[in-house]
Image 1 (tube, rainbow, N blue to C red):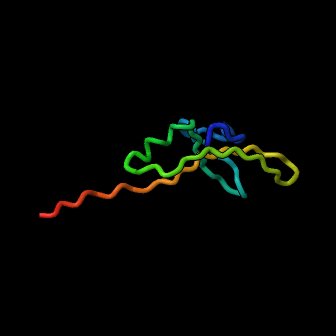
Image 2: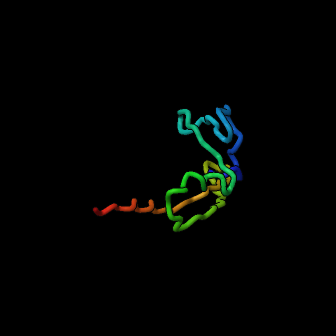
Image 3: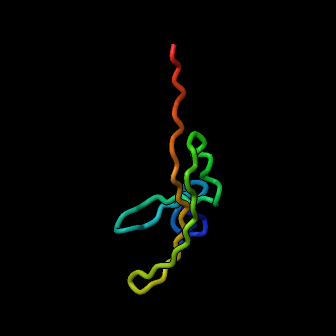
Length: 83
């Protein structure tokens, strides 16, 4: 999720950008990233698509701002040695 998400910073902080939050009657860990921060996790992939989505939703009479960083990536093929 993006640091621009409305729930970023809520709950108990575990580490940089990581927060334990109450969700659906249980505890959930959410990690929030700056726009290009997760790119390092895709270094072995070909990036096919990257998009940041900012949404506003209404749930049970309350407005929520949500922000996601979406990736579509394809793992690079391993080179084959033919001997």
